Amino acid sequence: MTPVLDQTRAAPARVSGCDLRVPLVQGGTRTYANFDCAASAPALAQVTDRVAELLPYYASVHRGAGYPSRISTDCYESARGSVARLLHCADDQVVVFTRNTTDALNLLASCVPGDTVVLDIEHHANFLPWTRHGRRVVPAADTIEETIRRLVAELCTKPAALLAVTGASNVTGEVLPLRRLATIAHQCGARILVDAAQLAPHRRIDLRDTGIDYLACSGHKLYAPFGAGVLVGRRDWLDAAAPYLAGGGAVREVTTTGAEWAAAPQRHEAGSPNVLGVAALAAACDTLAELDEPTVTEHEHRLTERLRDGLKTIAGVRFLRIWPDSTDSVGIVTLTVDGFEPGHIAAYLSAEHGIGVRDGRFCAHPLLARLGVDTAVRASIGLGTSADDVDRLIEAIGTMVERGPDWDYSCRDGRWDPTPETRPRLAPDTPAGSAPCTF
Image: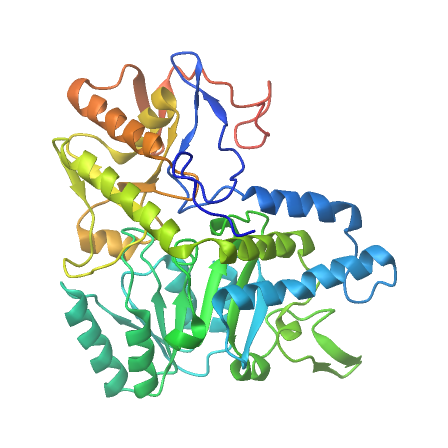
């Protein structure tokens, strides 16, 4: 049965932790409102159910003769089909499992036979790895149209092997015209890589239709936070490159003088794989593929507009945006508030209202510098976000601006915390940062 969107609960599928109660600094608890999905999304309940189902059968894959090994191997290998179906992969594209998007992009960087062209708006994961064979940075212009013209000029002036772009900005949520960029790259003799870490959780991506050659994304942003990611792409570069890791599973034959390496994807998956993480990712892909995409997209758009419209009424709120002529964005709203440090805002929302947001530079330092801010606050909408959550966030920020927080806060080493901190956090007599939560 195909899941449909429940407008009252605002969730097209069950999300783990939707009823989580968190302590407030002033006492009592409140249901957690999660606006930090762009960093790590909660697990779909179907994902946690699948992991629990597989756990008793967890065993070594590919070479184990026991029944659990056969089950684990089948789950691991069939997961490639789940990913391929969600993304509508082309026949010559293979699915390589990685740890996360960053891992996937570094893997591809080791395979690219030439220069890579990138914009200066990228997440560090799609900016730092491309120096191995030559990274050419194109500064974004004041409009998306002029930015595309700059990319065309760069690609046509000097040949490049790859154009690497984000699918959706992790700072502003703005979506790039991927089909158009793929056509431009191909006309200029390059291939295109899409960092889909932010786009994949919000939009259905069709690799065949758009012409995307390579795509990377993370399970932990795709409602499968069990430590697996994926690189999907054309096999020729992956087959020609040296293995990303040298070890068991990546070889056909080993002698004392050399090795015969396997083809992709096994070529780049040496060592014991994250079977449970991959099974979780497959479950997320299967669940997302069954959702009614127009309904989910409209739901997200409605909540995003509700949040923007509400925040516009609050004095001093300013939104971050890269281009005034961009026409599409996912459910990310990033802002500053005059007179308040972003870290202070985030700490206040958590401590006094049970609301989680992200503050900082979002691993996109060049973009924040371009936008003229040191840090900002990011609120991201996910499958479990409701209209009530949005209204709570608007009201909480409005209250902070109108009369200030009810609690004292202090900043130490760049981190804002309520003073005193009354919420339970760590086990007794355990150094900070090294203990599990007590609740």
